[in-house]
Length: 278
Picture 1 (cartoon, rainbow, N blue to C red):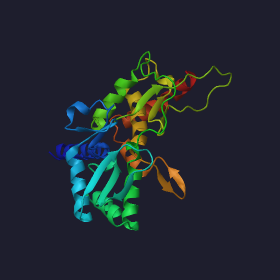
Picture 2 (picture 1 turned 135 degrees about the vertical axis):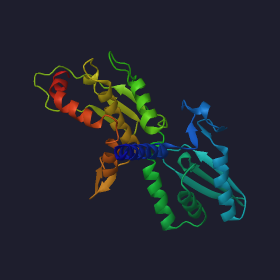
Picture 3 (picture 1 turned 90 degrees about the horizontal axis):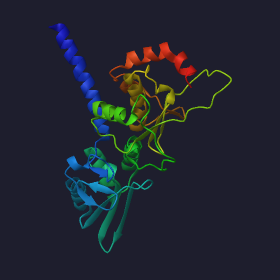
């Protein structure tokens, strides 16, 4: 009985941490290109995004109560300006980034205070929220060149979809994936290899083509994808003036991958073979 309770407790902790990752991605506004649109109660708002009208109106009503007059709230998909506001003929016109729809109540309250009164405290809270939700800002650069997700032995699109559903509640959107370029033959043997990378500017995961072999297990390819998706979701933190990409929060979530220990052991065992296949 005790073992059963312990197993249940571990399962609850894992489920809770995965739910936390999914919540970090959840939103009440989505880009039109997102394939999940058909399942959500949304209405059109402009050519680029679909907005949950109820969430937009809830913030608008809070702004009206604080302002004491008419407010017109628009939701944007801007890359640089997350909040703008001005008054025109007695009406307060506010534009906010889509990340604020569905934001926690303290963040919405800070947004209202910032627009109506300004203030350093509200500005700092909003700044922290924007930093933590940088993954929701549209890619700054288009992906150059064609993407190649289907390899000879592993389909990265399918693996990305599986990881997205299992660990992020299916909420990861607008992240591209491709096999990286195969290196030219070298006379000197490689001593290191970067198996995956993530470009925040392009929202692009690259996986090293050395993993596209029959002898590389699917769970290891998906571990690499999971690791790079964490970079998309969890922002770097500042540590003594330097950006720390593998923060304690990042490491904690990385260990939630189902085959984490197995993947680390497999990499150690086969690193020589991976180096030789580049």
